[in-house]
Length: 158
Image 1 (tube, rainbow, N blue to C red):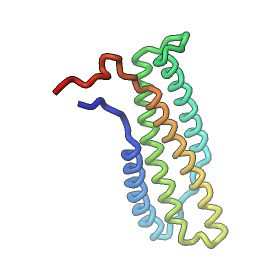
Image 2 (tube, rainbow, N blue to C red; image 1 turned 180 degrees about the vertical axis):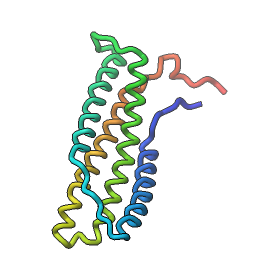
Image 3 (tube, rainbow, N blue to C red; image 1 turned 90 degrees about the vertical axis):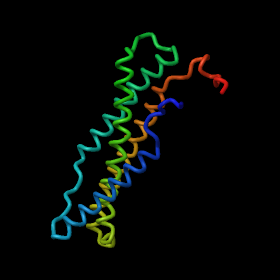
């Protein structure tokens, strides 16, 4: 039996692709009726950066305790919550990347017009920040991983 390894990168890629596909279909349907997509709010970037930074700080504290280098204590419950938050951030980031890329794909056929290029730029920036959020989640999940004990290193004979 293999131990649970957490969220995998393939899971994030699949979630992002499904999000992108469904979002593209929805956005194409909405814009086919003549509606325009609203630009993304800049507050979203601030929120994603804030969440990623806070997650890295919390994960670093758990990592220090895990490695035995901390003066303070982090309760097991707090460490578990940090791990769950990291996994949620990774999944959320990947789904948001899909959403923002779908917006770019819908605007891309008209990218030869300067006004449309100006609308694409914020979506690309949001997608990059969402990708960073997903990366922060994966890094913190890795930091929260417990190392195997010495007695767990040896495989039992079959």
